[in-house]
Length: 114
Image (cartoon, rainbow, N blue to C red; front, side):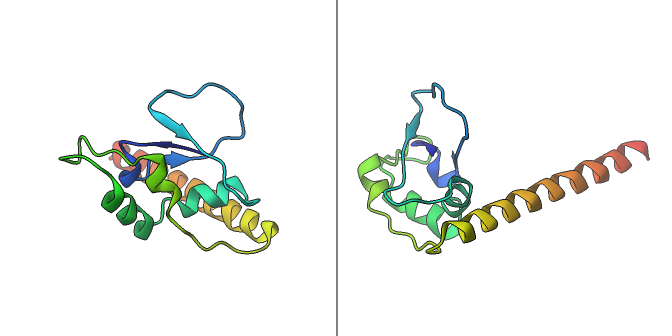
């Protein structure tokens, strides 16, 4: 998992299936328990968690707020016990996002033709 410490309150968190180098603007974290990364990435973008990130971020304005790892690590979340359930939820959320994106593209293409 990676998150942008200055934009976490906007949902700047995701997972990757690839190994590689990440910008220093991002913090790399691993869950302490076995979780499905796509599920966990979705979980961390929930509106109630975005509010917690904003409350725990330090800085004078939204442009300078930073969510330090120590504060992020204190946030507790509930997850389904079984990894297969997490994977199914993550896959469903990814499929829904793809479907929404497809419909938005079709809609904008229809608008461009008129």
